[in-house]
Image (cartoon, rainbow, N blue to C red; front, side, top):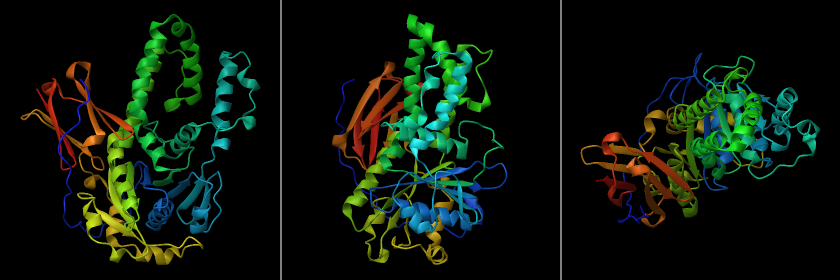
Amino acid sequence: MAPSLLASAASQILAAPRRGGRGRRRLVIACSAGAGAPPKLVTFLGKGGSGKTTAAAVAAQYYASEGLKTCLVIQSQDPTAEQLMGCKIGNSLTECAANLSTMKLETSKMLLEPLDRLKKVDSQINLTQGVLEAVVGEELGVLPGMDSVCSVLALQKLLNFFSTQRNSSQEEFDVVVYDCNNTEEILRLIGATERARSYLRYVKDLAEKTDIGRLASPSAMRLIYDSARPNGKTSEGRLSSELWNDIEQLIQRISVWFADPSKFACFLIMDPRRSISVSSALRYWGCTTQAGGNICGAFGYTEQPFEIHQGVAEKFLPMTFSFLPFLPTDSSADWSRVLNSLSQNAKDLLRNTSNKVYPSVSFDSVQKSVTLFMPGFDKSEIKLYQYRGGSELLIEAGDQRRVVKLPPAMQGKVGGAKFVDRNLIVTIR
């Protein structure tokens, strides 16, 4: 089906933001951080200079003050986080305060571990016949894309989302607050598993249906699989089909993990005095939804929040909107004062996210319609395609493409589409 430009303009919902009551201590994100509870990943999205690093530092200090074992992970050479935290942040876990550790991700150093693991497996199967062993890791530079891959591997060590079981040899954290280099990297991370599933399907076809694939893929698969060792398994004595199934299940598990707001909480951060900062936050809301993630709330960060018109918060309804205390970055923060000035509304927003997520897709089997919530976009930016015999829709907006699988009872050709009140409504014939 050819792309259709969708009609009608979006409007804004106006209402007052909610304020939550006082919750119990130890509650973070959606559930208590008691024994056996999964760790949580918290991050902030927004335009550069809007306060992402400061918000991450405030959140980390808050969680730690609640008695939760917290780790602040940064991915930048910018000294702002060190200045705020009042401690040196290195490339290994460093205890900064009670219940609070910090770590800086440096890709040039993180490259060495996966390379060593590849070398160890290669020495057993002799796939590269000694070529890999001759590679000197310290001589390798960082190429575009390596930051993202190495960041995922580092977060995996802290969060263990590759496996359903805890690794007792690794330090456990109740909350990991991740201050990424930029918002685009987080969007790629959120959408990575869904995109990886598509690529995996084609790579599997090449491996199984071509001569070169059948020749080379078994050894290459063993090298990669045994180096990664998902769930602690190796490829020894297992068929290629079993390894492919393991990888598919792994991708599915990670996809579910990142789509669960009780495990992965994204917050918007903006300077409400600057219209471009507000517009960027709205756009990132829509992009996150397109990537398959959820935004759990929005924060304003400015020196005089009470002078901001209520209209800014109304643009982000039905999400909860709150303010973070302003921190000067030219000296170490007085965290006792900062946490005392953190509003109850902001604490509730950081603690509980599962019940604040607005559904991004809903199906109406009676009207045979699909409604997709797409904030931050206008009708001229949205294109709709249909493939695979009417079993799914592909929606393109911004730099993200999203596949929506239709329930069996609703599968068919698109009859029409319109864009109303930030929602794309698609009717099926």
